[in-house]
Length: 311
Image 1: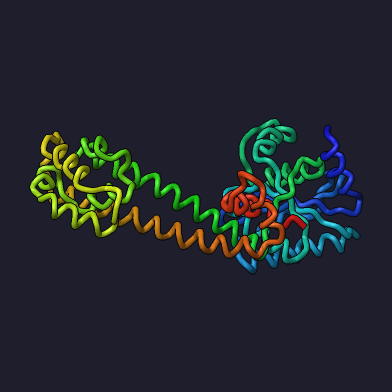
Image 2: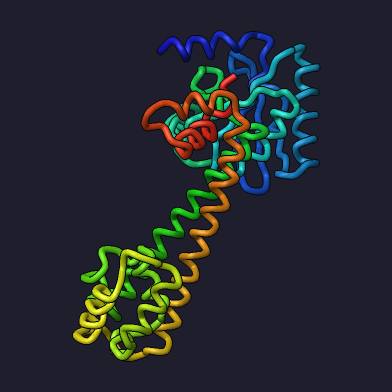
């Protein structure tokens, strides 16, 4: 038993009501006991609604009055995201809540009846017992700007996943229809390479463009650095391409759809990063952290999104 666990156990006294909750999508079940494991009342079933939460809080209050207790600690298994709404309600009502490890719940459920089978009422008691033994963690529920940052980082993770998917799909398209393209350009996401892809032309069609036509198209976004030499390399590669020619019309539509999606994701990244910058500028100490070599704004944003207010 480590020091931290001893501290947690010491916080639970004879005046502490211990609640274990088995979390579900629609309806939760709670059981109450004291520090010795003696259970109070009957299991409380309540829905994941405002009325359900109010009923649960009244149930806690009633037991505390009946048993003469002045403290309460609520333990729950962080099942997916279904526990978050309840956690916020408990925080608003100044009720301490903690999270137990799902693996500990699974390992402990055989102690009472020698059965590993899942049962909501049984699991609620197991969770309460784990809290009694100090086997829990205190989750951070961010508020204000820190809550905004956590959601922003979640959005960034979604966008990153979508971007990686689109990047793979464009590579797949190039491998099928113009495999020689990446012998001319190191990567298709560069300004010049992307601009040529936005001709939405298959290799045999690209080879028919004049050098001047391709240069005019290129200069719409790339003013210097890439010129006629690269255009001639591209046309030569296109003239010898072994890319597919069948299904040309839909192939071009596929490429346009992918590039539109890619550019939309990039635009959303820019919007999100701008909002994240605005958020972290509101947090004390950020400029000092950014002054540390190797620490960037994304690292700082991720740090505060996880730990919340350092105070």
